[in-house]
Image (tube, rainbow, N blue to C red; front, side):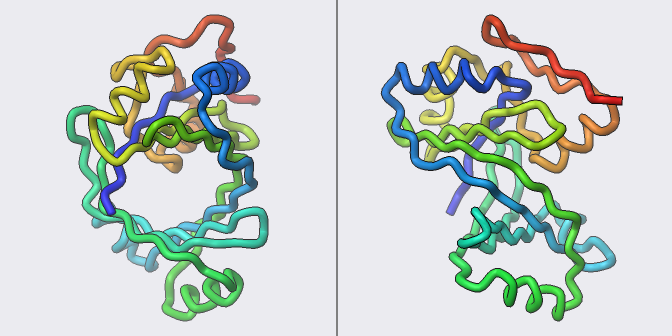
Length: 191
């Protein structure tokens, strides 16, 4: 499956939720997610610009995802994504470790997901990182429409992945990208 997405950084969470609800977007879920990324000791997966992730959702369900062929086309991140449900994440974790894959420290977040038309709007909140919005849809035009319907433009977006966003924030690089909706707050890393 082709994944087509962008992120809008440093959003005002309550404002985005209000806008989505005003547009009659359907709230799908609010979950707690733990992501574990895996790679070999030589970083061969990362060096190929690929990802192998075990995602645990609410400490119950899980998915195993492999992403490859990451490209930025027309300011949209596009990757081939293969994902399957995992019913015993503890065993899958051990299988991956047994294959000599190293687990990169997990990233935990709260995710609130809305859907409008064919677009998914995922509001991600990490403990010490400003909240951001991920917009994903099956086609480029649907991603562009989703960006515009909530009051942003493509110039307000980024194609960084979550690990890149966290790394920039930890290195003190500002996370602002493009305009912010009124009343949004600028965040600084706690020192």
